[in-house]
Length: 476
Image (cartoon, rainbow, N blue to C red; front, side, top):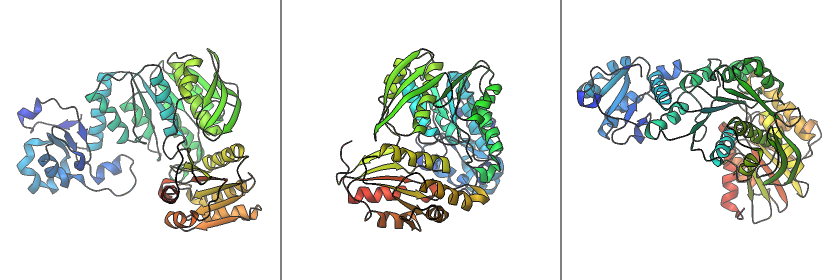
């Protein structure tokens, strides 16, 4: 793994270890602890300041860790504490790189197929849908938990193969937020057999500068897949479709508006929690009852269907599997309250396109609602144009037909101002999510259909938590 174990206790050198951790609080007997420090984080594209885990090495070993991987120059600083346990230390120039090399070695030993997914929005939902579809075909599927999609989260997932190599396929979300070839690095850890590209949107433009740079970064997934693999591309996004020229294997396209190999036709939003459409694949057509709402989620389902096609599944098999999925938590989760109102919990993340798409969803599917209300948090990482983007998004929201709009924190105030200038007078603003949670519970009424959406940093899930404290959810 690119680390020096020459000073390690000879007994430990021959030990069989299949479990590895980066959090000293999670250490269990027999595991190897990787002590991360600020230099590794900085060198591996992580923004911010992080704790130096070298100071926890002694306690990790005391809790039963078999050994610890330590950065050489950090040992010098902590030598007084670490010298007595030097024979249980493995030294590396960069502990994160060592961790990634170890994961790559485990992956190569397993040598199974990887479905890798990236995009500016929808990665986690598409990952869950893809894993569900492939599981329905009888395959044992490894997937990232939560959104473990970066240079630490992905190797943590891959290293599960050391403990259990019986997985048939790995479905891995791959993310990026800087121009430092993050996706290319992730592909080097676990080379994709199937590369799914969802969309290219102005997300992380604060760090990448332009949407062209975002497109180039996302394209690293197709460039990084195995020779002879399959690129699954969104035909409704021209920036994604242009990536077909980068494929070193076959291409499967999917879409709603443009001709594609995998399509959805006759889409009907019957109610929240039920969408029907005809799934079209090269194999044929099948009627699909899909328990998620919104055009964006249908596209995510089609991406998963594209993976199913790549693995030889029929349209009937894919349609059946899509009928039994459940919404990931905080991503379009529908909550029906006993008091007669419905809330769509989409608080995990937000960007202008995703916000507008979800609002269109509640407008299209909420014809029976007395009021359609949106609670939208400030959208982060939009760069120096954030205020104008929020203002323009507010103007677009006002034209969609909702009854009331609340903004939460920061530049969401510009979104409210934009909506007002476009004629939506029923608006409000909360300075943070705590205030929003306390005050919004008094706004709801029977017959309301409410969308709560926000970026992670705004924590609009607190609005949901407060609603759940005060009101009772019916069995859905």
